[in-house]
Length: 213
Length: 206
Image 1 (cartoon, chains in turn red, cyan):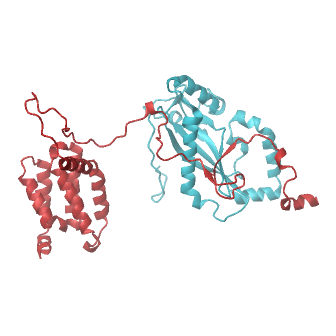
Image 2: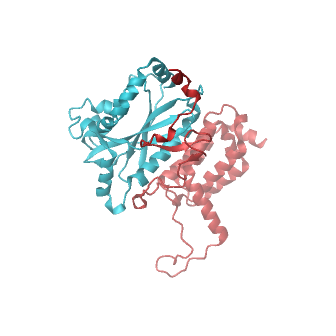
Image 3: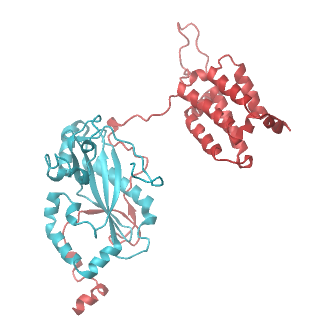
């Protein structure tokens, strides 16, 4: 009885005799843990695919990238005219454009999140907003390369800004110039005309006054 | 759903349309994970499958087809029709994978269990700060992890439940065959748990 009462003070007499199989596998342990001398973690690298069988891996659903002509393409139908070589700058521009298009959905969500709950103009990050609108306008420059959904999302982004407290940035000189260029272009889409003209015309006139004063 | 109040929390999960099927029926895998007060995480090797009673069909809205929870299945007409208690050992799954996916050399431990361990650790890290808030010593917490495998052998975590040994008997934690092999140990456990001090200890720790 006395021994039982004092048992926690003394280590077990024959700790290694217990050879029963232990079906609990230790997968994580911190320093000083009972059954491990040093810390370890069995977590696999995050770079490992969630599909363990490569052949059964699903293709990720990324938005459709615009179909640009490749540098080594053999020209237009009939093969009479070879396509001009694409310069490094043009290639970089194309890559930027593809990135903007692929991220148009997240850009739209970001604008929505940034502007939806703002109650004061002072809270709007104008510089960031102008950068984002520039990206959207850049995407709209080539509507023929956008899917209908991407076009809709890009237009919605402008719509979100025009109806928010950040609408004042649409009257910035640089933005207005880009919008005018877009409206002048021959490829302009009716959805783009709608969002750029109708929404901008509905802006309060004092915005223009404030912007240029 | 209509009984829930307006300020209750909800978790929206993707429905796995194409789960791996066992004899045309859906199943999930229950794994026990033990976390000690020193944050040692133990993964119990002998998980088990919990099968549904009826053949899987995405168009069939019957819950007995889609939900494999024992608490639901036990009320179904076909409960225990195919497997006793709608539970099977992982050996059955191992055999099925070998037959069905022989072309891909699917190995349960390498391709499924290892991913389960990753998911266990991910949830542990996300919840670690909330475990053992009073820093009690010499205690543990037992969690039940439910996993689902899809037809591409991708492992999905369905839910994690916190088991209170003070409320549930050991028998309900294991499938029947497993429990019988453990009956000697469980008898000892029950005898010890009947002592007043141990009961208090279990209640404090769970």
